[in-house]
Image (cartoon, rainbow, N blue to C red; front, side, top):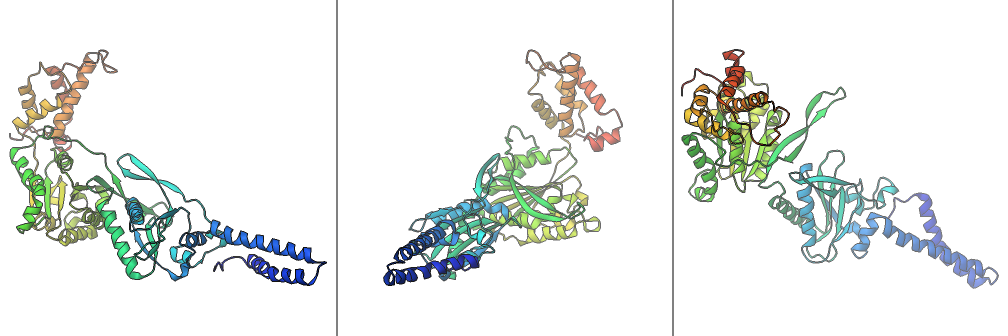
Length: 505
């Protein structure tokens, strides 16, 4: 055994025990008077050597792995490693687990945390003797679904005796400094390691916990000594709360519904047929219009009803890191990439503070292959601010949809939907529709909430409704509510609240 990192004093004891065996034998053979001492020396030396051999195999990671592999000389193996972003830990760990359980032979799990890489371990090259000792890994919670987490070890080895593919040891660990997950293996050849690595990576993607889920992107900020954010740190991929928006919930003009149906839902369902006929599967849609007109809600409707599609939602400064976002979309395709309020980051070049991010977006949208099933869904309240190279190029944006204030028919549908939890049996709905001319969807919703508040105050039931029945709304509740909402200036109300009474139906 080549545990040459042992301390000099300990190695001296080992050499002394080995020397004591022949010396004790000589003493027994030549001197009856000292025979008892010779026997004692041999017994002590043997006991120490048994402790050394058995103890080393029990408490040292390199010895344990060697013993599990039939006392194999680990130095004859070659170690290989591949790093992944930290959010890939669960996928890589589970794929490695499945690989270890396949391929014949048996897999023996050893959970022990070590700072050294596998190459150092198989060559018994530890920073300190204590580092070689088996010690329990940290167990940390990791999300595996929305509001569901499991505990995983920071370091796990699989000893793989009897395999025919040349892989002897498999390991998955985390890097405490970078947060990366590292897949390592000790193999008989580079070819064997390459095949095993490729198999594990493909399996980790095919069975990814993120596939067909609703995801959000975040970046841990890099902060300097003064508490200032200098750069974006490691990416964090999380699960968003699933949304439920049915066809009954969504109220849109017939033309918009038909456009969405063809360009999103039917397009996705028929993508294999379309690809066979040369139709590109990469698509870009841009929603624009005043605030509160239903752009975000329509996005939710789309990804709530897109089966077997991975949806990635990015907002605010997160959109600056478009390259890793698109890398995830490419890995988990078919994918839907939702970029909300794109004018905040991807504004026209003359006024853009994030020109590098703008260039990255254009490169990424151009970089996907035509047969990549990736749909970009962009929203903006200010179309004139969006860079022309994004919105005016068909290869990047294939469909633009305007969301304006709803007409009278749609406003009536909005009023009826938002009134469902309340008693509106005595209301003049046509009067409410007339008073909301030029109002956005968001304004109508707020108007009804305000009318409910007014009614509760008038009936003396602000704190609680004693009998549990919904309040019965009256027409004057709405008159009071709309007067209050529009009280402080028509211009401000139009821009902030989404109400422009001068608009045409």
